[in-house]
Length: 260
Ligand code: 13P
Image (cartoon, rainbow, N blue to C red; front, side, top):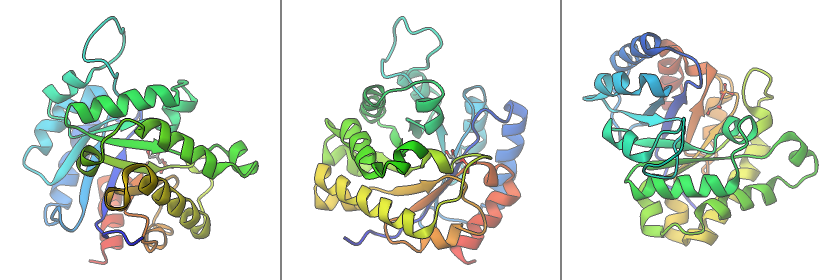
């Protein structure tokens, strides 16, 4: 199962960076990466909701895609505190991050809610960046592949291959590897999980689409492991947190993996 090797590289700034911080970060990033074409790397930034409209203005003529960190599955309604796909479309969002570990484990999002969000993003023509990953306890019980299968099969059960082909990215982010207390993953563990994810995608979406969906890795990615992880043919990109929150570090890691 060979996968087209196109690179995806981006960051989720979580609940860091105000509008002013995000604007500065994006201005520096656009300047630093202006020579990188979308064919070399599909770059993306996912800031906080309050910074999205300003970020969109700054990214307008750039090669960097803009994402939102979450979204409600309904277009409108009595959902206090939620943001709808229509609202995200209105400000020119390209990607919606769905089911991030912190959404699932801090805020209790379920596989079924994640499924509805993936469907809503695709229905509105935005790329669904579906995040999946097992907890440490699940890994210790050796049920990680079962968990990944359940998360993928639930989220994608009603998605057409023709839509997935254009509007679906996956991020494998093991919960135990994310954040300051996370443990960096080994290459062999990442390889096994990405191979499994690819086979489930093929099962659900068919050989052609299943092999073409970008599958990114995220969780304590840094300058030491970025290139090693990307040497796996089933890892199509990196979804980086804290190691990419300074434009100069984002740019340095990007050039390191592109070997330019
Ligand atoms: P860290 O790279 O800080 O572990 O975060 C990864 C992440 O959560 C990306 O969505």
